[in-house]
Image 1 (cartoon, rainbow, N blue to C red):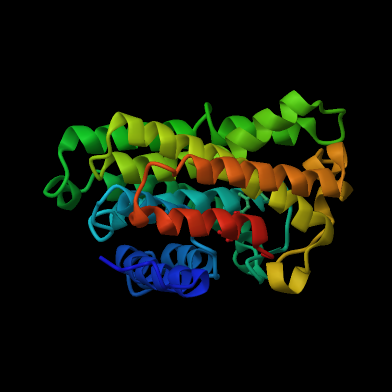
Image 2 (image 1 turned 180 degrees about the vertical axis):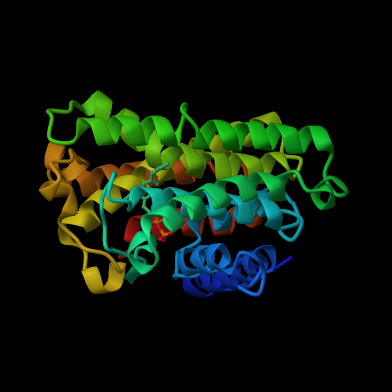
Length: 302
Ligand code: GRG
């Protein structure tokens, strides 16, 4: 296992991204497979330069409880598949109608709407194929895999990301209170972040107590991540982010900075990240990556 005591955040993230990208590449055929257009489309979005936060968190949670990150890779890839599907569908004209994502034309712009819908559907479905593959159950008890699938499907569906996205879309241009904004943020963004951490820990034989602490860690960084995203939408550099800024205000979306101002939003991020790090108090040096990721969530510029 890597010794993280003397590794920088940047080189840690870089090394994890390389491992994840290699695994993603293995799980999606090239465009020599039939029908080539769907694989080309999936690859367009999957390899457009995402930060890989959810799979990195899954691997870091596994590591924090003494698990093997290589065993966890199919689940980490499944999380990235689901995340990429959500971005493809979020960009569609019926939703946010965005032209750029991850610095490249959105999928419906590069191909067409039908292909973008199908590629999103395919990624969501293929995620469950990866997690239910026999290869994984040779290394992890089937019941644990089923429990992880339950956690991830709950986070991706109506009780999680879809619930948050639904309220977000229907709230555009309306007055939204702090409670509704909290619901949107914790479901739309937070749920998959919590699921990534919980699944990584559960599949690596974490104790109940460890899972509770890691879930609380993830809830805090999930919300911090979304508030940071809201701030970046106001003042981020489109060149660095690979997408336009100022879009939330144009669409009449309620955000943390709109509700409480930029400075209070920054203070809130600090508080959440501090709380996340406190949850790691009972873990040893194997939790250093989780600490570094919490720091990254606060400082990121893309
Ligand atoms: C359409 C089913 C469906 C769900 C959409 C994830 C989501 C729900 C919408 C994305 C829009 C958005 C800006 C969400 C808020 C924060 C967020 C999830 C940003 C994108 O995630 P990053 O920053 O993206 O991890 P990369 O490209 O780095 O993977």
